Image (cartoon, rainbow, N blue to C red; front, side):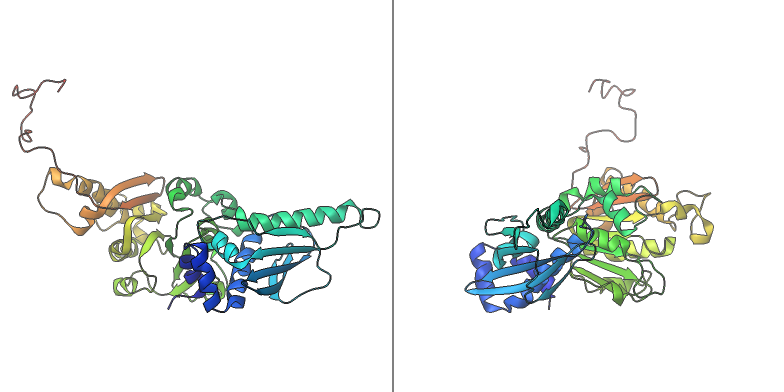
Length: 378
């Protein structure tokens, strides 16, 4: 059964009436906590007030009012209940909030954000008003315009995809169409070695970038300390094809291989996971420099060696055009529709490679111009 946060992603795409009916049939308090938990994780990536600002949140579900205390600031957090000393008051229909956070509808028609008590400038001074303004901005931005710039997210969470490498510009180019879609992402390699709470910088980055996405991470070491709403971790060997084929993620939209970088593992992972991609999905491999390093299973002399990761991916370019020179096909050749190489990385597009070859009457084995079968302007 799907976890609540994944279920919310499906429910939130339905009509307001359907969401309202669903809320009548489930534990609305649990749903409200999940929605505010999503806001907390988004707010943590944003510029915040330099001190805690308690916010009284009142979410309505039918005739019920569900109170929560949301603390904004450097370390946002949420708890059920009420607080008399709240600086801000937020009211919103729970169904609308769910659809806004987890669905395609960014409606704010029922939202109110106002000071719990208008501060007296003769007492509180303008500084307190500035704290309220920053807290209100942190809340509304987390709801409606969370931090989505990949370079900023990489720096915020400490991912090497910007700074040590310059990958985020390429990711942004290819991932932009997926940004607001209900996607499932798998990244091989979490980082942090054997510390169960270390690593995961890129997983957090993807979680924020894909606001309606579910992110899975796979590592050789267990990483239970990194699990969060819409973020799941798995322990296993990326060189074990049977394990990868059975990995409990469901169909995938994006796979990112930032794992061992050993050619044998990269090749095994590709053959096991590329078939699990949905049509239109992307398979990405980073750090392909290891394909030229013998100690990593690479080969700097035979650049077409099929036992290396670059040897495999370069061969896919011929597979794209296989119908022009061979009647033989393969599952991979029939489903690779595009390949994009950048420095030390490759993006592979999945789809249906069914375009017909050139007509049979076009000569293949003799120069058509020398034989008088064509003229240069044809």
